[in-house]
Image (cartoon, rainbow over all chains, first blue to last red; front, side, top):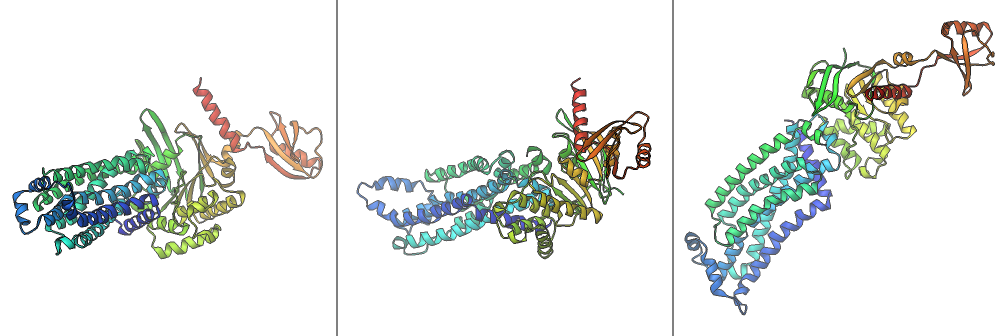
Length: 273
Length: 303
């Protein structure tokens, strides 16, 4: 494979993303909401919730009781307010973090694969002497790398925001824990790859980036299910579960990308063009 | 040695036979016209030459053998569908496409600069592609086809959106490339450009070869027994062997009788003291031949 060519494809696609307000806006807004506004609000206001008139503390205690015994052991030294903060910011929002790599990967990949078709630039690209694999790899990396970078930046922002916002209650640095490290460096890349695989397959049929994005966005549903599972105590996002989740996502991503690379053949693309 | 050698290729899509037992070759140093009505199978043929599609049967040799990845760098293709990236500067767009053709940035920048100057686009290189006129974009697209100095050029409607000045500019470049020994396959519906540029043509219809050969051979084969003459003095009212004399735009079209030969008429005119400035066989324009052949085929199909 000619890596100079792949680098050129990645650079151009990233330039296209940086020039497109429609693509860039969700890439900035969504991480800003999930990684800054939400933790800042929860970190600062969570303790106040228990002091609010009408707050149902027995219900909240029951809510906390959903955590498994080993998780509770980890939090023995925390007060109720501190426990609420840790539960909210360290555990509740953990699966939600996965929305970031997923969203970034699908938005950029939709623009890169289906968007080229929509803008009629794909034919010229296909007739260049690049191989199918170089084109595919270039387009894949141009969505996957930004997904990882945004996730990493989001993680750092989230860490700073949670520790600062909750400092009055926590009085110590409590974020990140091992689970989050696994989440960021193991599960998030896999999640981005799942989003990419789904988008590549959808883009081969879709005629516009918007169509591809809308259909590919359905892969967010399992993440929402994880958030609900965590919130209702069905599943506790411990380190082991997170590691296993990563394995599952990598397997799914592998299958989707295998199907994707088989659909990404010039003859197939041109025949449908 | 031909740079393209196509032997009995056939390609079927579902129940439609897009290309049917087609054979032709393209030599170095020639402009070869690939002609045909819409849906005749021209684009499918080009895609098979470029190894995008595989023929169901038959063989294609490109640059002296089957297509390889290395050979793709020696071909320049101007597709019918123009696909420049609209939101980036012309220079950046062209550099990107040159890099995909294996060029390093410094040689791409130099070659692109030369072509941009030659095609009067140099002062527009920092503008976004979408800010350029259609004609300018067409010239830019041609630059992406030529930038890596391909030995074989395949160009689909190279003159679309070009004004007469730019058309001349592009024609000069194509002729220059032919003189350098490159082979150029040109697909167009502009028959006047084919007459001016092409050495040989292939006319296909329903994927089959209808006409193939040098332009003059084909035109002669369709010529009626007429002669075009112009002279410094007035032609006599009657010329032996001529049944009809029609003035056309300051010239005359002489219709010969069954037995008369052009040489004999030339001799007669000179003997009569006519000072000729033009004496040529009245060959039909390619446009007329194209319409005639395609209509005849339609007539045959409709019974």
